Image 1 (cartoon, one colour):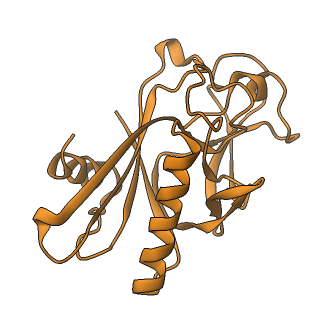
Image 2 (cartoon, one colour; image 1 turned 90 degrees about the horizontal axis):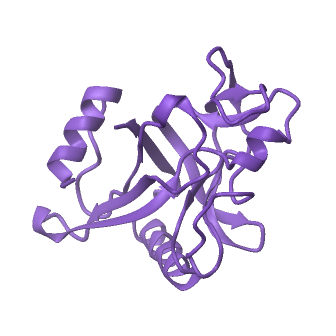
Length: 196
């Protein structure tokens, strides 16, 4: 998808436009439908980072990564929270993240409340009547394994947004986001999680 198509989808689903202007970063998750609402344990979604290097729209960068916006099957079968496994709700999440740490490496970590669905039926089907909760649940954005080549989600997500990228590529992205923070003073990143 190009920026115009992404923006139209964001406006349709959230009522908000993607960000424009120099160094104003939009982070977009594109959630693919699951057959029969089943947890796939695969990286079948996408996470996109886009911004303009300057005021010229032709300077726009779009970085797209294979990703998952769902927890891995391991955590659907064995939730780490008594209320159930977290699934970030689709929509606009304002100022959700800032550059911080996930385990022992730089990533985007949750700093504001998020709306999640809790799945506590301990199987590979999304709960048709999940409990909705709002709060800080460590719904971070991070990478999977350091080589960026694993095929299944497994334990890499208990509800986080996880992308496939080599650790060098991911670290370079985090450093670029830190540079943007230093230049603009905008230290929080919002998230558009959209359904395909």
